[in-house]
Length: 198
Image (cartoon, rainbow, N blue to C red; front, top):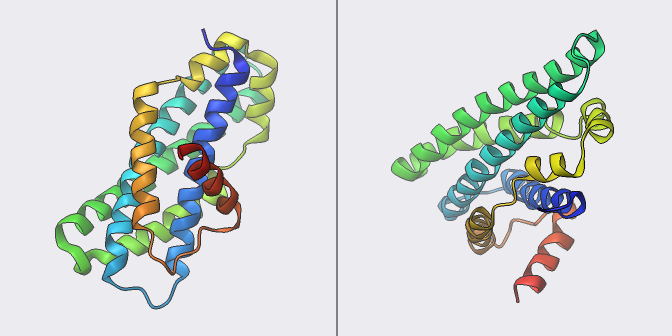
């Protein structure tokens, strides 16, 4: 069984890659002018986001269910902490649904769907940065309540998924327009990723 350290490292690496994708999308939306050469990149970003944000959602629901079973849910403070994370996750699912619909329209309609895709992307990236970041109260509860086995179960180490995720990540890097910077936090991560990949 995976112990807690590899499980936590796996989650952090996974979410680190996701953050670099968010940053690249944000940087792309700030580039002017943009043209049809951005469409393959936007689609690659969308494919990655759908897979990664879907997996993150499953991880977080698993974490909340396990956490609620281990803490005193009759304590109003604990109840509100758990409820707040569920509210954030619900909002994320709403944004992801809209974003995915715009990505699918971009695939079928091309340039005619770019504006809607970019508008949905801006709204989604803003939500992720403001509502889906570190939530200290739930993290503190998990640190106190979780065992090594809990950490491994929440991480859900899945070699098949990681192979797919790496392919999706490669597609993002390969389609990134030349004028789109990686974003400050992403630069070192992508350099490390490419060095590891060889």
